[in-house]
Length: 593
Image (cartoon, rainbow, N blue to C red; front, top):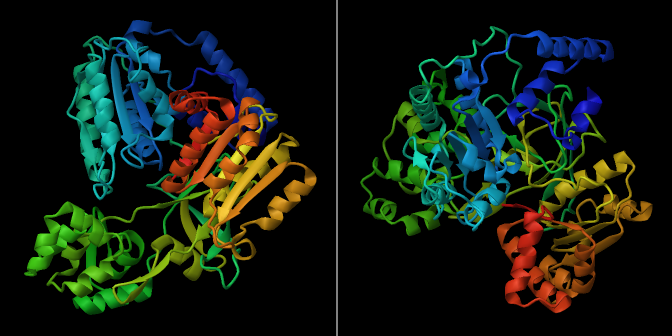
């Protein structure tokens, strides 16, 4: 089983969709060799002797659940819908946009899409091929297709749920027909997701022929699924600071213990993580509002004290515009009323404030249950995994930068980063779940050269990449391009990189420390300076990876354009086409935030 899990990324083509493959692996977890042999024979016998249902009865109309996710939320919604449909006897095919062939759209009858939006209204990286196909001249008529879209986004951004809006327009242009109106869901999306899933269930039933044979589900216990609704409780083994005490950024390395039979991940994946809010901040919040932390409140079907709800379940450190609007309705302050009606000013207002700033500046009368009702549920925070499970099977390593700043006469700490780097102690448990990132993967061939570009904590997944390669005994050509502020204060995991350089696993290291010299240098400038070598590596088939902030990635893109023109002889248009071809081939992979 260990080999099967660790080599899942190297599986040959198979007829299982994502959900079926996951469930098959969950079903055989813990079986020894003898039991696996027996199970394989049992399944072979079933395939040979089970009664054959008429294909038309069970496969027409086909139902595909397609999800495109960046943080794992879209997959979670799709899995919930798949469970609901399967419980009613339907057999939906659930597949990630990364593994979906866009030209198969012409063969679909019923297509249900769950899609998130990232950056400036962009689709997730996994959906890049799908969007490119629909925007190209290769696409064909989709007049036989009926579809529905559930869009996930954050209304505090300008391009709210834009990926779903764009996809709807593209499908309509090709003649597809809507099953339902598109749903745009905000950060607190679960209630809308439940309602939408019920509507989908009804619509699918309406499109099912009366003589359609349904699959009667067997009554058996489903394997435990650890996800955003049921996180795994990982124990903290170690926390150590990996920047110096005088560094501007405070970055910590954390090791969390997991059960490798229950939690599996691949290099490039992330974890979603839940945290406990700062008790001191909650005491101040209760003092300002005059509320009692002992009063019982309800969140959905759960009853608990207000104090527990504030510590474990509610969002206090990321202030959302909808919370400001709800709070303004409780006050007589015209400044807040006017602010709430101007979306640009409202976004500026929430950018450097937390809930405590709002209630302190604009006092209002509110009872315990009303406060709970107007706040959002806590949103998990995502961190790239900085370790390989093949190398260290029972641990997950994280690289966490403490968010801290002063504004509005108050010191602020990030919710998750403050908890992880200041309050969580050894043996404490943290709720985590794996967020797969199929668009940020090692090359299939271990001999393929890699160029890994990252700034700050964006270096984390490359530690997992090289640990994986070292454990496999591969010695491909690898080039690390890393940027931060100061060499002596912020060179994260310096010993690891020097050891990989010494062993030959890391052939080349290029560094850009922006504050060590009068002229600030960033990774995008370093790439252009070494453009001849960069273009040579790309021409030899290298994969280029970028991990870090959106602004950094934009700078790198422009550097690539310049390198293609300077060293590849491209004009501006063909340079853009060259970079586009790298993305299409899966050789330019990004993990940006």
